[in-house]
Image (tube, rainbow, N blue to C red; front, side, top):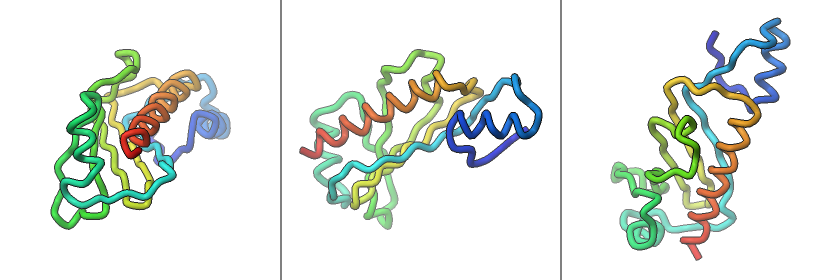
Length: 136
């Protein structure tokens, strides 16, 4: 069965219980995690954050964007500290001028449980902290 928009492993467990699927293995193919950096930033092409990533970080990569996407910076993680089984096939980070960060992931078929969720969230917090640090 495919479900869209389940928020966290606890919500997934409730859904499985309601559908009498307790004990079934849950897998995910896509995840979206957001956070607030707590700072505003410039987002034009060649902005401060893009330059800092280019100068300071081998962990992140600046991704291309259309000229009309002047209100976001697009990045991706190219070096993970996650266990090999949890590394996504692709990921995309969008940082807005107001300091919102949205990290989208794609996996082939990742078994999702509380431990996996905790580890992925921990990595996302670390990514956000590193980006926040680059902003000064």
